[in-house]
Structures are given as structure tokens and as C-alpha cells.
Image (cartoon, rainbow, N blue to C red; front, side, top):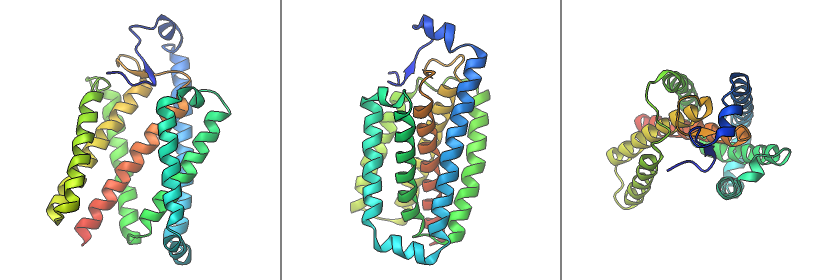
Length: 239
């Protein structure tokens, strides 16, 4: 199974001759890194404004419907990224969608974070940064190609969703802890896959040269999911 937003260098001669050029690849990777850095900085500013400003945090809790609207916007853009890929490959439409998605995601993350203690949010940020650095180095220097493991990832996500439904009826602290740890492992693995698809080279599935917005949204979502898993984990342990 191949990612719909990727191309295989074995089957696309034009892809081999163009995107496999080292200068083009470095330009692609640097563009993705800059976009992800912009997204993370914007999210950090928005989230810290609500977390460390009590009045703003209380306002967001009272107006919870804003977070629901933001979450719906995120889901719509994710669906568009799966079925309307061309919108994310041509500027300025791709940049507009990137900004809208980042703003909506930041609001949703802020609503979650205001329900946790400030120190737990800071712990989660620090551990997320450290874990992402380790996973990035592993993805860059690992001899294995994980980009062909998408079927396993989809099965794991489906199993995690089914398990989460059972958690609604059989709620327990230990069961909750197991689900969060499993989700953390799965999303960490997805981050490794996305990084290998960005750096390309010997990996079987790679992002196209015009998929820099799609790649940045994917990496951004992976990091956010890891952060939320760690935040939930610290919240369970703190209780």
C-alpha cells in the first residue's frame, strides 16, 4: 500500500531525474522544516497565551464551542488532503490551507492544555522535543525502510480506536495508561515514517517535490499527537 501523496522512485523516471537531485532534495527538506517551525512557533504562542493567562484560559473553557469548530475545521482539511491533493500542491491555496489548519489546531490544543496544570504542559513540551530529536536521528540513520509499513500502521490505529471505544464502558486507570502508551508508540512510529518519506533516498515511498505543505502538516500533526499523548500520560501519573 502506498501513500497517495508519495511516489515510488522505482516507477517514476521523471521523479528519479528531478527530485533525486541532492540540491532539490535539500531545498525541499529545508522548506518543510521552515514550515513546521512556523507551525510549532505559532502553536506555542497561542497555547501559552491561554495556558499562562488565567482569564484567557477561563474564557476558552466557557466558550468550548470554539474548540469544537476548530476541530471540525481540522478534520475537513485532513479529508481534503486525502481526496483533493491538488489543492495542497499549488500556491497560494496550499499556504492558505496551511495557515487555516494551524490556527484551528492551535485553538484545539489550547483548549486541551488549559485543563492541565502548567507544569505538566511544560513537562510534556520538554519530553516531546527530546523524543522528536531522537526519532528524527533514528529515522535518518536507521538501516531499515519503514515507509512500506503503512498497512501495519493503519491496522494499529484501527485497533487503538476499537480499544478506545471499550475504554468508555470499562474505564480504569491501568487500562487508560495502556491505551496512552500504545498511542504514543504508534504516533512515534508514524513520525519516523513521515521523516523517511521527506528525506527520500533509498526509501520506497517518498513525498513529491510539490508536497512540502502536505509533508509539513503530516510532521506537525505527528508532533502534536505525541505531545498530547505525553500530556495525557503525565496527567494520569500526576493523579
